[in-house]
Length: 325
Image (cartoon, rainbow, N blue to C red; front, top):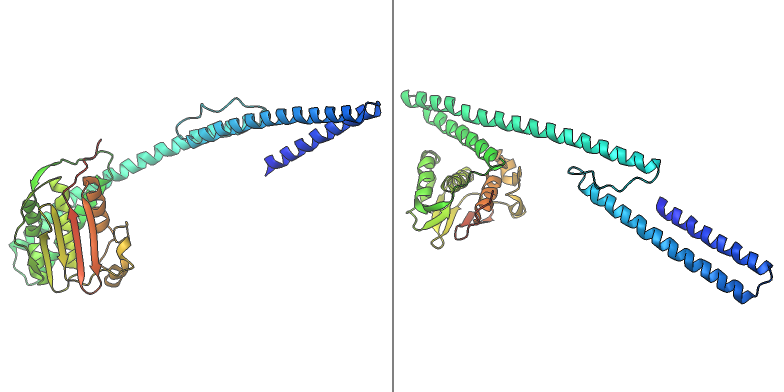
């Protein structure tokens, strides 16, 4: 707005000077035609000069905007300052860049320390978990089965923390190789078998066939999370693990399902939905991690659900996009 006012005042001054020039020529007795030519010539030259100045200022602004877009990286692309005011502005930008650099460095340091702390914590917590499991196995008590199940959940949450930290690390530890799909799924099933028995939820699983190109550890974690979700939201019924083709894994349950309005957002970080809020069971992290992991593995991922009838999760393992460092 300020720039527009300056240009309007400049145009008014040009017209005023041109008018004064024409009036002086007319008072000197020159013909009206000659005065008109002089007036037009003055306006034309003024317009050319004004246009050139306008182009010059626009180019300077474009250069400054380009530097501002790259403010955190560089400040050596600013044009020379014209006048003390512009010099002060440029000095303020240089100071802003320096402050930004210090803030970014400190933020990165704090982030690295926090990641180190939580990684260490997640590893250390496994020691008391293992000790408690041995104690529960060595003693017979009616409550041991319940305590073992709760301990299993604690270990699952610790694993989620580790995988979350690894997933957000700067270096990926993906190791792609051809794996037997049945071995990956069977390992997760064995791990969750006690929970199926305790929850009295039926598991329909007759084995799988086929080889897939994937990361065995990360895909196994995804399968475990999906089984955990199926058990969590299937108070009674069946969890089915099948194939829809040689490289398509399907995990389906007959649980409470997902509300239609929540379905598009279930993979968002921290989103719990109606069912999660109602039962206070959801952390909003499980499906988010599954979605991110499968995306980085290059596998397709879709969820279909109907409230009150269950949920069907499909993982397409036929394509893979190996991430580059």
